[in-house]
Image (cartoon, rainbow, N blue to C red):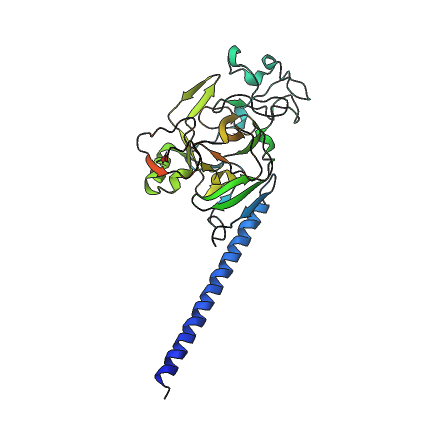
Length: 318
């Protein structure tokens, strides 16, 4: 018969071996998750997206998150027909004349006072945030080199997803970004207002990824509409899903029409552009509330960790 200390010794040894096996399995699973995530990053079109975590042992962002290149429409959302699109006819094949906006029929929806192109010759945005950007499209007489075609060219700036101590995952630039340069568009599943309300009520954490398409601007005025659609980037989207909030942002959003989407006040692209010069390694952040930080009905406050001198201490989500 074995002595009691022998039994205890065997038991402890078995426990240590079992614990070691569990740790090995956990490490292996994390390595597999990381490898799969990196594989998905490499498949994303455009400039490279890298990944870094120097904070903890979390291998990667949520494994179930799916990277997509365009909007994903829920069954109850009516997809605009490209047949309703139109293009400019009198513009030169080399591109629209930026100093003669009156000659481009793509801008016919704008009044004379505000009729101008959104970009300069360097393809940097020159109109204020939240104001409508109209890009030429496949039906236009101008060619692919037209300076009005910026967002449709895709992301040209290399980015890195990285882990922060307080804000979770974030994104920083791998090159200098000049003010006005295009960064990327917000992607996700397009859902209607009722579905957005339902999801926000049962998943408070996920509600931070719900982006209402509730504005549309013409000229200097932003027209507020009841949100017909919402973009949900909780489970699918692109790298912009990991952009954090800041009370002193360095990027902002512009609504964009043209290219793939027919012109409509209910469904359009959301494009991020730099509003300041941004250094290499600087995190990309935007104000989740646009120009203000006012609490709306039904919203709740979340502690803000942006760390800027202008930090208000909280931001609001559903």
